[in-house]
Length: 327
Image (cartoon, rainbow, N blue to C red; front, side):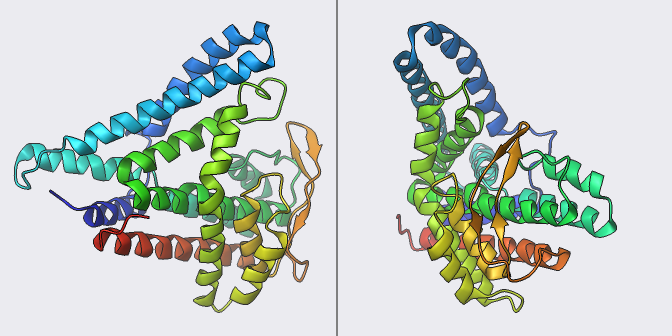
């Protein structure tokens, strides 16, 4: 039977080369569909009974989706045919490699960042705003070129954790089942984990479990960004580590600020600050020092740092899998 080292190597290569083609059904969309159905049914049923019932219903949905995702992924891996030459074994191995690749988002993240930067460089600010709106939750209609670049840097840093290092971390911890379970957690948080009136209670469990699941990966990502800065002349590894320690908590999220602070320090720029969401301005603290303006070249360096961070994380995961070391 193919080992986990070969699975993660093939999956990582698949993500880099192919990414997530829209014509292939993605597990996250399937998970999202299940969450949407459960959300409509359980939130509506629990709302008349108050906050406690809403929290209980939301927690029940989270546990159900998490259990189903983990169980299905476990069945896929546990009952894979043992023969390395049979057609069934080849097909099931390919399925496991593809499923593992869908937990990773290096190609998608790097390409999305490059598209935004390219439009800013060309002076197509309106187009850059549209492309940025596809990868961030904030309002983009009034952002200047520099603010667009800063937002793209922030989302690359944050998603280096959510979309790359965290799935690798959970794969190293428990193979495909845990990696898929993490993607389910991340998906539920993105759909339910809001602090607005609609999801304040029902989405409470989704937000809290996401915070817990990302606590270690976010800090590992910050360290890996600092390590990546050692390999890039235009980045400052020492300052990446210093700003990560100083400003890692300067965020509304207990985790997102850590990789963002490491990226800000590595680039010598200031990120964060007030942002608009759904027409409402949210006051957020600044991250990093205002040493230099956020330029296209700084944003390009952020893309390189993201890619190198991903590569370092992959190499560590590959070594752990090859040595059969589970975290």
